[in-house]
Image 1 (cartoon, rainbow, N blue to C red):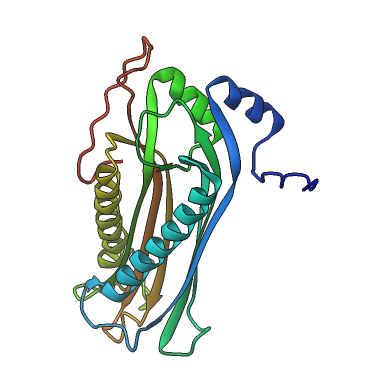
Image 2: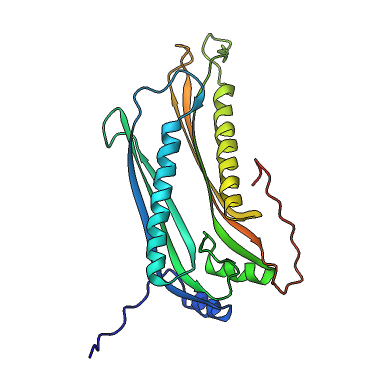
Length: 258
């Protein structure tokens, strides 16, 4: 006879969140975790303005691997949803050598058994438990993560150096390099929207914007450039047709909109 106590579940819920979740038919099942470390050969950055496709492909591969691991763990727990997903993305320019970059993508979430979900497939969301309760009251359901990423290399070819009264360079905006983050954000936003649509989402909530700009070269040498990275993370949601709610928010996904 096996008298060993059952293994306790692990999650990030507070006692009040646990109590509130049980009232809407959600039971925590445990914690799920996915991680992928990628190394990519970069060589020298290009002398033209374009997206760094190797970083894009590496990120997509890491995301696929993380989701595979989390789905496998959720299967073992019998969970049909994962809430409070936390996404960490770290880049190390020197770990693997001067011609390589390494980056780590890590996702952690709380797996749940959601008896009131309308979806036949498992959902993942960055939504907290408190936000989940509010969404249910408003008649909405999470249906998946919405993530967009872009690494964009912007070159300043046409920048004119402004000289001050004493012959020194004047403080000035590098207008072409300013455009880099805007372009990276537009590309990342479009990809985030596409991922939301693929899971059936009609809106995206809780968007977290993470950006960085790494300038290189100089205006004097005519080789001023910047590597602009943009990462957008949110949760795709849709209207629950069975919801008994008087709240009627209209949601409409459009390319380039958050």
